Image (cartoon, rainbow over all chains, first blue to last red; front, top):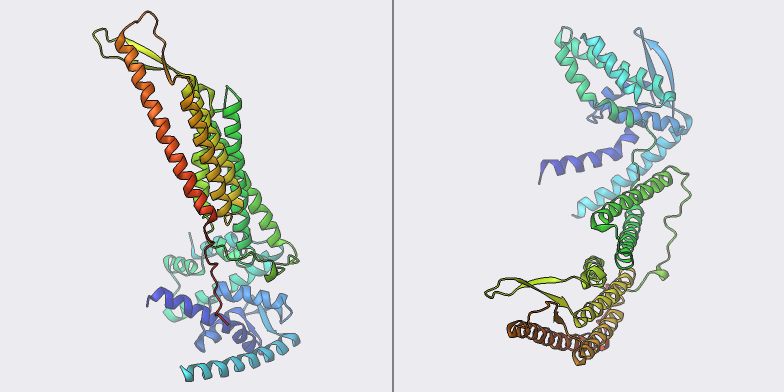
Length: 110
Length: 333
């Protein structure tokens, strides 16, 4: 099996998890860099080219709120879940758990 | 250049490619991210980053154009939802453009003595094809950006055509059309029919003796040219309806029968295929050469009649033979 093929499929598999991971982490306030580090520390690496547009998209969808604040003499944009985002995160979590159960069932038969 | 200057240049390059309303926010966020990463790296190394190290760090972020593009609402000129329709539309439109250009070329070649010539026709074909490609692409790019009201799923299984057993591939028909068009233009062009050719008779004199095309050859060109036009029209129909293979067989049977009959009438006629146009040459050898040429043409016409009759029978059989079973993909009940 080629490395490239595995890498492509691996990225597709991980891509589906990112939104839930981001929403779950933003139950507490983060700015982009710390969010990326927190995800990487948990084994879910995401590059800034993916993360920042994703955060912007989630905010435009009303799932996040953000504000600029100065910290350590630099302006940073802090994100956290909006009320709609909290509801969405719960729903996605339930869906994730359903998928896990289905997948476990399929894998145990295989 | 300093490391700070390099970062500023990078951020400015990203900014230039962003919509105005996003520039401050996106670049501000990116600047903070870059600085945070630099600080982390310097803390780990225990020293400031060198210019080359910072260069590699910025390269890892990606080309400024690509970075900016990720903030655009549309990542595709024509997205995956509309792309299949775009490709299909392109095929139809380009097919029509090519067909119209070829028809215009043949009409020009047949009707006008001062025709535009193959080079100009070729250039016109390319320019109209590219223009058509551009228009179709622009239309679909606009559809992609329009509010999503287009009903792509508005299709009905009841309206789908039946499985096309025996359908003639469009590419084959298109190639057939192309070559028959060329043949029709060449055969029906008056300049070809009126051409004299010189035959050198190797006698002691070695003087070129011109022969002239007789009415018989002109008629041959006309008949075959008309048959070619008929096949061109048939091919146009088949491009639109590739499953009409029975019509194709009938049409080809009729065309071949017509050609056989026309050739037979020519063979019975007294019109010569080749005549001598040399004056003052009473040589028996020249007369024999002309007679030989005429005999060769006559035999060729007879052979052509036989081939045409054989083709008529073949296509007639194709027209009447039982239809192939249409393919089914479902299990028998």
